[in-house]
Amino acid sequence: MHIMEGFLPHPWWEIWYIISIVIVSYGIYRISKVTKEIPEAKPLLALMGAFIFVLSALKLPSVTGSCSHPTGSGLSAVIFGPAITSVLSMIVLLFQALLLAHGGLTTLGANTFSMGIIGPLVAYGIWIISKKVQLQSSAGVFFAVAFGDLFTYVTTSAQLALVFPTEAGFFDSFLKFSAIFAITQIPLAIGEGILAIFLFDFLAKYKGQLLAMMKVINLPITIHNQRRKNNEN
Amino acid sequence: MRSYTSYDNLCAKIDKIAYTNALAKSSPVTKILFALSSLVLNVSTPSPLIPIIVFLINTILLIRFANVPSKFYLNLLAYPTIIVAISSLIIAMFFGQGEALIEIVLPWFRWTVFKNGVTMGITTFLRVEGALSCLYFLVLTTSITDIFITLRKAHIPKILIEMSLLIYRYIFVFLEVEAQMNIAQKLRLGHSNWKRRIRSLALLSGNLFIRTLEQGERTFLAMNARGYNGSIRTLDDLPQPKLVHLFGIVLFNFILIFLTFFTMNLLIM
Image: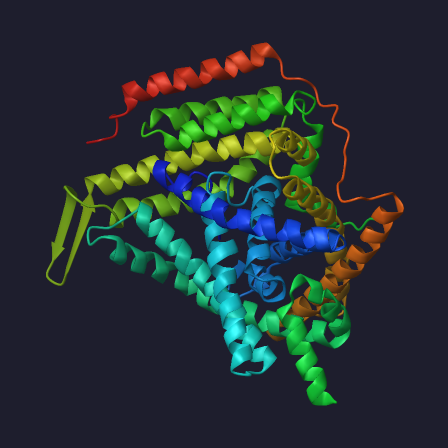
């Protein structure tokens, strides 16, 4: 799933650390600003992090027979936005290394970049576009989460290809890695997308108001929900 | 209330060992410094010998001095080892460039194994094994709270540490809830086919999310009632690092760096 501890050699793990830390520090700035304005957001955000961890510990049945797990960061990006998600993902990845020995400390930067930055950015971008074109919310969530998941793996393939080029160069190696990942990841991304639709509908149905209350954290959902309510009225 | 399954999982087992091993009471600064310095050297070195030394030393420390059950340690190591062995084999056979080691030419297909690809495969395998042993040393001897209290002293942003401590607490609360709901769903045939499993999983995650939100509100109320003003303070009565240990770590690192210069070109064919 994640790049394993020690898989990336000398110059690369530092490079990904530097890139990730720049973006995560912006996320930390955003979080401290939000929690200063609304102190009750802090336990809420922390609990969201725990939720992502538990979600990623769940086994998702996949079509190919192998069991893998949802990343959870796509849905978090839809709800909280990509900046905050990057911080939460970094913490969750650290806990996955420390509590599950899954992923690693030197590869934390690279994994944060793929799962916590590129994936959520893609998911958030698609979610915004789907709102602009007034797509149904379930379709929007599906595409956002599925493509967020896929782009996480495209990024991972690129990171691996940079380290292990083939004779034909970076691009050939990138295609090889993507092809290996695609076998398991395309069904998995679709599975996670379907899961996210159910999850999102469930939340809108039972906790729509609570989600609206979180407007303070700049919830994209809120606008969506209000528009839906107005339509119903 | 405790369910039977939640404490069976890997997460809880690693956590338990981290609190109960024989090195749990020694200074976390020493343990973190040792694990991280050997990890960085292990990952940065081009020499194939350093990862082997690091792996052996960590394994001896874990099994002999920390009294970690060797069966548990080997089980933990087995799964990543299989994966990395397969990936290293693929890298050795299909990746690399430059001078060829073996070349098989068939009329429709040409397959070359490059010298540089084989070197890459072997060093990757050794590097990952060495790095895994460093990670396991840290994970199995040092508890999460000790790690974060030490990180706070190292001036990592406060908000990050507090969030991490809160997340750590709630991971276990939710694993418990998740295990209970999972049993309930299984008893009601919620996992009998693929479609039902997806639906059950979604219901479970949705309910978990709602519990998350409600728990968040309650936590905030409880914290406020105890005079929460935006920062969580914890007592740190951690043992001080011993000078002998710190000196030992520096010496060990110097030996590794020294050996690197001699064994750098060992694998380049």
